[in-house]
Image (cartoon, rainbow, N blue to C red):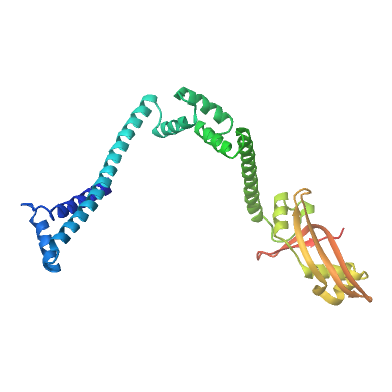
Length: 300
């Protein structure tokens, strides 16, 4: 509306200057003096012809601007009139303007002479099929036809997408619950040495300790050097120390609800080159209190 008003003003001013090149107005001396100044500046040769040509161009541009601005203004009035009618019709039918617009748009895809009652019936059926409303159903049907598909294909895709979203939502809920549980259990991990197979901690604390624990190479070397001193791994641990230990890892197995760990002992012992992998349960832990927890891997 503001742009149309500005356009009308500009067009009117240009029109006044243009027409003053041909006719002098008693009360528009500023327009006439404009042309006098241009004549004095450009000289007298062909000044009259130039004045008329320039004036004609002013009039032409002015008419274009006036017609465009007038069209914008009339369009604005027409839209206002339509808006009043839409609001009145929506109130008469007892629905919101937004709902009325959707129904009005839906009629473009429905058979001729369809009524609001026809749409409402379609709307109920569409919602039962998983669509947002009747308009969503009609749009989906229209797009499906353009793509060479059927509405049944669209419904199947929508159902699969909804099932996927529901599964993802459930998975996120499970993860969030597990994170909250682990966070609470983490705060309950006892200080110092503790064992999960002696009833000292709950399953949640056991799980939290396992997920945070690491395998201490020093503890592995100490155990192998003492309890397995006559075996190749014991000799490797005694001779090479922590450098004989590699690939240490500890993990929680959700299916068995147990903590496991593994490591590899490798090196040269008794003239032979070894690479031995060992694994077992982790049920003994040591919490230093400094944010680190080590786990003891028992041999199977």
